[in-house]
Length: 239
Image (cartoon, rainbow, N blue to C red):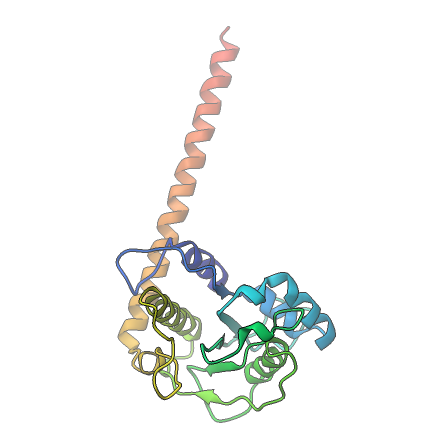
């Protein structure tokens, strides 16, 4: 799931963009899909109050995976994932934060299956922009990104885009560089467009294998504990 992948990615346990994994910067927030889902189904006042608990005033980059589920009472609904990205520019006066720290002015929205029609994903993304910007009503447009060639890899594209974006951010910060180029575009722009179907297959297989390996390790540890408990019980009964 995206939630599990985001948790492991933030902790530095997984990743396909570099061989050496490292925890993400505290300036990055990979918003849990459950939190995104909850926010977009609240009234704006409640959602804006809730964002204060996310410590957004300390974040420079926020990634929000968005599902097209329109039913607030069905968390497992929906069939398509897209990605909203918010970041602070070095050109901004970040000292002008409001009480909730919701002052993002820069947004990109990526849909790997863009049809040109207005969909629930974009409606949800526009509501998040309104919340994260502190009330902006600026229109949100889909930005150029790689397009999927099937009807089931949208979540994998979100993961691939997320890895590229966070890696670009971390690399720029480590080199004390801006995360935007001279034209004001984020450094990951061309990389997002250049993602190939074959690389998406690799990402899908990587996460499937990583999660399967982690699950096997957990099961093995549980079995070892149970075996140790059984041996202890048998030893006590023989006394």
